[in-house]
Length: 118
Image (cartoon, rainbow, N blue to C red; front, side, top):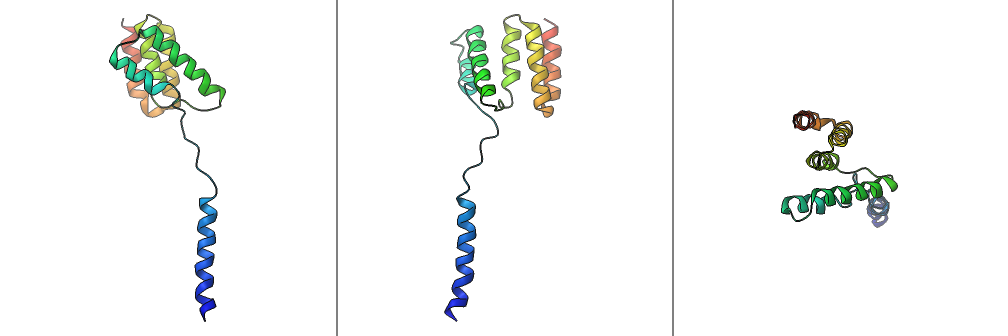
């Protein structure tokens, strides 16, 4: 009789340990360099060009790993491009953000319109 109560408990323990041993799920997005640049943007201690350079480098690293940049990455880069007078590159970044994250379409359309009015 003791054996009957032990067997289901052991089976449950084995099943649960099998799930735990499979490792962690990799992150959905790669945040390399993005958060510090947003912080720098709001602090205003680095030039827009320095921030663009840092984000371009971070994007190259993210893409080299086959990862995806986080939501807002391309939008932020586009706003920086617009701020330094690179409207075509800004438009490209806004379109990339819109393609990767369709839920941002309304905001990207707004930024696109705003940057072409300058």
